[in-house]
Image (cartoon, rainbow over all chains, first blue to last red; front, side):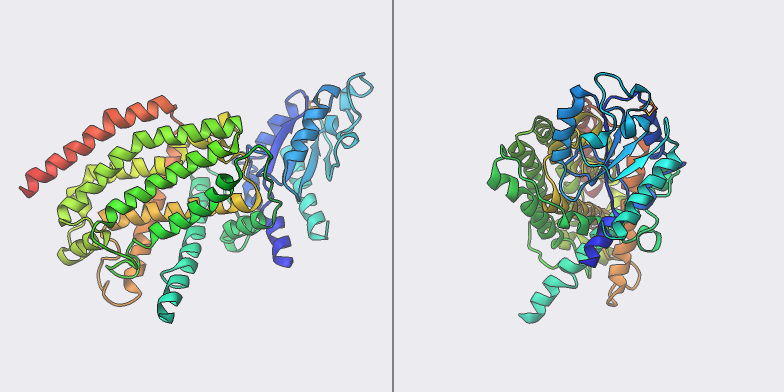
Length: 141
Length: 319
Ligand code: SF4
């Protein structure tokens, strides 16, 4: 059992889903892949297909329109799967809170494991969030 | 009998190849990362050496989703066949001495056949997924084969003409006994083989079948869990196969000073394949992706004539 847990902690592949943000968070997610921050150091690779990924990097407000698609994409991921809500929008609706079409946080729609605050959060914060997720995994889900 | 089975399982066999495949994946990733001014995997084992193993185990332990619409027998068969074919092909490469584990006259032809099978399996994998991205990826994989297959086979003929044999082991033996590496007479063939093998491996300038910016993950989109682990493993084995083939056909295989002493040949083989893998990753870091039409027409317009010129040159020199 332990070797599986070790493998899971060491190779969390991510994929990126923008639920309808302003693209600020997405740029920061991409920035965490660039040479300066390089999350591949922790074994994280950006995959295109949700079927290959373990961690969903969810950015942007979850709107009523995107809800069904988000759930569908979430269901396409293979177990065990984790979600990181990145940015105030994904956490709580951010500046769009109280808007008629906006859910106040992604956790109203799918389970979220780690929240990364900021508008947009810095790449360091995203990496910190990822490390927190891995620590949570190491401590046993 | 028991010794044969042990050989098959451990030393020139599956366990050794598995280790080599994971090692070259790590080397490729690290080297590419350094070229891009990144660090690459760092925290899994010493300098990330265990990263490919961690990926492999994690994928094995993940849920294995089979969408309802897929063509189940083909979809299940493709990853298994891909990895077994790659392992089979690797048994024809002389690693521990000038003779491969399996060899017969004409195994070079059999090798090209196996490599075509690998490409066809990629197409079948994409087609059986019945996903629009997979289908396009699979079609591109088949299309790409039309481009690189002919120059690749022509490039393989060069060393065969030089050594007057169609067996990989014989070609290596010839190079070892005369001390002349086939690359000296086949410089063009060497370059063509490297380019065509990049396409065979679906690496960056020719990664059209899995272009992730256009096609999500190409023909692999629907594979998950165990199947994806086998697919990635097969690709790692193919990297070893490509490097091993180039080493045996053009760089003399395990030949080198003192190659007759046990363990020295394998060290030479290891050094040469490492250099080939580094060349492949270097090209990967240098280029951007071609379009599919550029790729196919480029292969026919430039690579095929160059390969023919190479063969004419050989005939003139050897007279
Ligand atoms: S949190 Fe801020 S930067 Fe990120 S998507 Fe929302 S508004 Fe844009």
